[in-house]
Image (cartoon, rainbow, N blue to C red; front, side):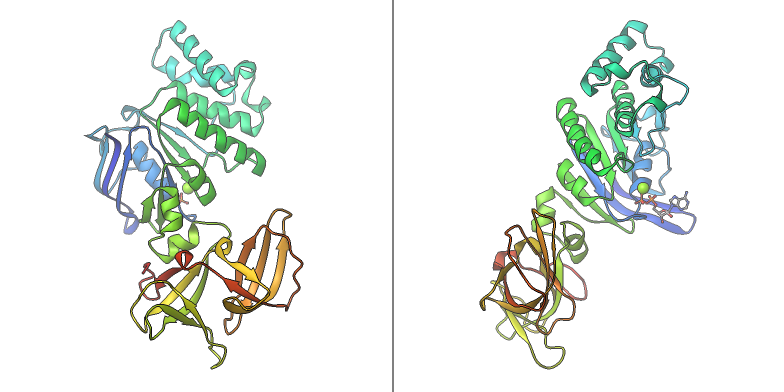
Length: 359
Ligand code: ADP
Ligand code: MG
């Protein structure tokens, strides 16, 4: 059954429409990520699910029941924010038990619940401390613990890891994922970080300017992006786009040659409308560099190495912007050196130039 069902949801502030025709179904136990650039409406959508923002149109169901007008405290959802929002004057145990005490739960039941959650999150040694005596990662864990003790139907996370340093963020990513596997609680997780979304979620919803661009399993979005926006947003480093025209044979793309020379041809391995103006999408990790002539002609522009990975910008003949190549093999490459670039045709993405939809 769907724990959360969002149908044609819209939300405006005055005349400004922030969310438009959103359709999302979240099965029970599913971990959904809402991802998109800053300002696209992720937090607003999460807040409508929590009941903190009224919606202007559509329906929102939790466990099949329409909750459009149900106040937040009756929706049985728990929210974890980026700013942990712990009560500074209460110790960790009091912070975690606050909602249970409000509900007038029995002291033994509160005790058992706090002990269980503290054990799960490794918070036992910290229960007597005050929030200011904890590190950022520990505070974030307390904020999650506080949500877990409530045993809600749905967990809502709004960029909970943004305030942590890079290493801790990666660690907490794994912890939250493991916790999800253990508790099996339905979760909606907002992030602007596509890697976080891809690695943590069962289902990823890509938002842009208040609309759903595409949703699906992480690898579906990676392998079969529906449009140029999703293709460029998912994946790191980002997909390269090269302007091209479908050739007379219908199964190759012509690109380059803005200067009347240096036109190149790329076999697409499939047939598309002759003469169509397109964007060719090439992921950096799918491009292979060769010293001998082996595909698209170009020359090395710049090389950056992180030790494990090399990021090589290649200037293709007749194309203005360099394309990025990512490969792990070490090689000594020099700026200006002639090279060729090869890609397997199943890895070539093609987007209509006008509609930006995948062809
Ligand atoms: P995100 O979380 O994806 O960064 P938000 O949901 O916070 O984006 O905001 C989406 C848009 O809604 C932004 O353009 C923002 O300026 C606008 N917005 C958010 N809250 C309000 C509000 N209370 N009144 C008017 N506009 C708002
Ligand atoms: Mg936000």
